[in-house]
Length: 184
Image 1 (cartoon, rainbow, N blue to C red):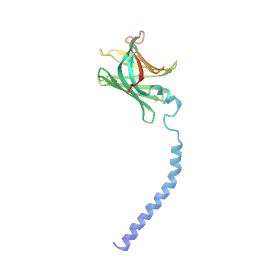
Image 2 (cartoon, rainbow, N blue to C red):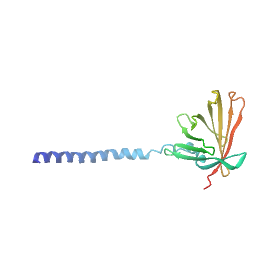
Image 3 (cartoon, rainbow, N blue to C red):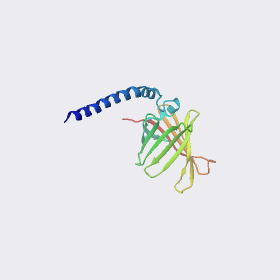
């Protein structure tokens, strides 16, 4: 390699080192400003449904001795989302994604199952309980309104759901579950 080539390579290396040093100095205040910004989903409103997080055995309130499912509710994506993984004793399964939508100031849950069902419900805290409601389609393709309520109770969480097939004029029980910490 000739002297001119070595000098050219050395010159490029020196310029790269100097450029990297300058960029480091210039971007340091930017990095500090970004890190000083509060973490996403850190406001107290995002923690209102945290009582639901856990590894649970689910029991029908009418028959509290035998579990009907296991549910794992895990905060994901930096605590912005609750992921529920529900495994019923009869073999069916579902997953729910629950998030506080700050742009609309509402809690939102999307629920999907291994049977192709989809339910989207929304709401918020009412009288100390999380209440989410919406509509889906029953097996006969008629609209069905759904309202679910989650409340922290001694030793767990109680989830009740009611349905209406007449636009909300009358409601009938759908399920009533008690979630207790999973027994190892």
